[in-house]
Image 1 (cartoon, rainbow, N blue to C red):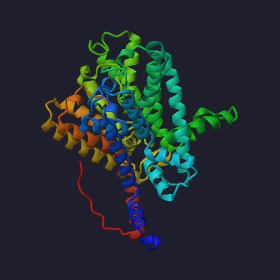
Image 2: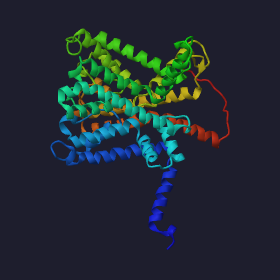
Image 3: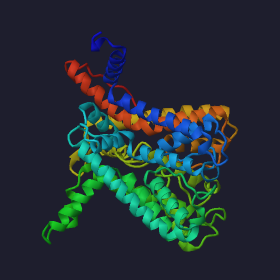
Image 4: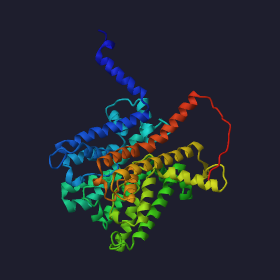
Length: 476
């Protein structure tokens, strides 16, 4: 019998053919699904629970999905339910979800001396929302290195608080866990049922956690571009101003920094003003603690999931603004979720230029391409539809208020993890719905944008540039 007639060869060949037929988006989605399924099975095992008993599959699946999708919603208490082994599994899932499994696979290939194929580069391009495969492997190396350095610094700083409180072993493990969870925007914690509320007045914990959330939420490409700006300014002559250095940043980086700053400041002001006298949130805190709490609650909804004040006791205005912050989320090519800051920024700029009577969307003397605008609009519209459908389903299956359901839905879709306290009380249908929503939220906005780009390129290759007759319709 010839080699190519052997059953093993046939099965391997079939598998190879199947993988070749899948596009990068499908492989990316399939990879995340496999990781979640494997983690769910491991978390079901008695060794993963503190009691030594099997964990129901739905609860294990919910936890694994929340960890891999870096959300932070939980149906069982992370500290009380999971054993040390289970917590390590959850932490590994968070790291995989934050960096992306393709980044870790690629680093493993490099460590083993294996070649990164074009197919792998295309998948990495999809995962990182890159425009080209050129330099994607080098960029991935920088992401992994930068992530480990920042998480290490975060853990070292948190150790100054956790080691004196919990001892060396527990303090170091707590520092590492919360640093990774914060940087990956996961929101899992080991403090208890009230997240980080015991540390509402601790400046070091607040500043470190907020710093990790903001850094990862900026996006990895913004890191590199900003670093180059500082490097250029440092090497430039004295007459080279910061305004000139800022002008050298890419348009994407400029938009990310400006929009992030606006959201953080407005979020802080809303929480501070509307909760200042609320006895259940900021009212009983000292002025310094109020500053910390309001700022933290402005940062955390940008997809982190931690909280230092009881969210269920917020005023309706603060809850509504928090929902808006969650929906927008962080920036592209990072660990954050949501529709992304630049997506919303492009639509706001489009509206502004339309009101001014401009036919093109121009900012910083740069024109934003029309296909970027349509892609942003598509992401927002699909996101609205998905959220509306899930809110409708949960309104029929769950016995909670509309605000609680809307808050939970947006939190799951934007992979935030904050809740008004209803997650553990969800029905079986509710849990499954939120699991699906977290999965869509983690992969949806990325794959939607890139899939649109891929389809457009394919159409340009296979079809001639056909122009159809134009006809106006009435809007507004």
